[in-house]
Length: 476
Image (tube, rainbow, N blue to C red):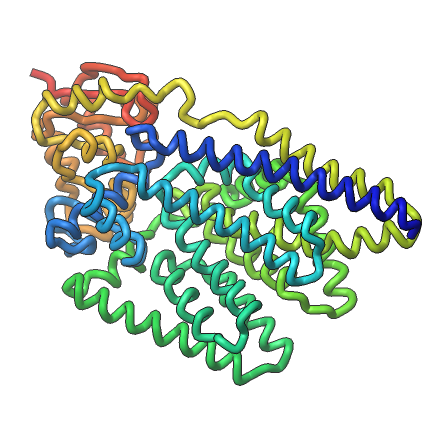
């Protein structure tokens, strides 16, 4: 290729990388500023914070099923212990746990860039595709929240990177993989990708070392958690999702992801096809395939696009890896302008996503009135916003009502004490995200519980608060 044209192409790539890097930094700063809002953004945030509070009070986050108050925590002990540390040091607040998510997202983006560079991508291309990850709207939404997904993904992705860069120190990867699985046990795509990679390389010794070490650490953690919880950890971890699988929900979530960034997916698919055809067996392509398999968890009731975060990261990593082959093909045919246009298109679509992004809770962030109402209306409160109870200083009587309702609906728990208490008007307040008239049955609350609430309670106040919009008090 003409040296002058080569310099022009490199200059365009560096300009694109700088522009998107600035946009990604803006996304992170915006996330930090938004994370300071004293309100619950996501349903699971309150459950995690409550688990941390229980630990600081000398209780287990995994009490016996059917005990009162109702508490279910379906994730591993790592995020709950970390939440306990924040509660102990900083009190009841969402800010520090959300910073963990934001930092984890930044770490994942950095690791995407390092892996692209390690597998042959240029520095500007690595920066472009890593920053593209932070531009995706749903990724930015979840980045704002205290969710176990981010910590688990950072640990799992870290294990992947640790094995690539320090293969002789395989124990570092094994430790990170096991820590990720002790955070969220469905994060299997990265360790599976490493195992498949080693299998294709016929490196049986390394495969056995990594797999058995990770498994041994997970078994040890499981035994310790079982002992800590009085034997209840296994139920919380493996028996709290009796809800049915919905393939249509899974297909709809995938369709939304294809619509959000088709260009990145197209580039990643080209890279995968090229590698499979040439039998290259590169780790980014293997990881794309294993993370695609892992998306099946999005079909469970209650699942959302948080189940596709890892897949999005794998797409960006594979697309960045594959761009070097697209670029070589274009340069060989003297189509440098097409190469520049492709990079500009990736940057333009990413910038468009950043500019058009809007907070999901925009216009509903005035929550102090909701919390003030709780402070003046007794301590017996039923709510799908556990975080609101914690911020208002109220005891949490039902933590994770979704899991509780699913267990009751599928006959996995004896009786329905929550419905009984609602029928007897034992709750001073029922605080809900939506009005009773619009509330879906058998999701966070069973149909009988909602009907009992309609019969025995009336709406006392509404609030411009995203997760705590409608307050009901007992009929006289």
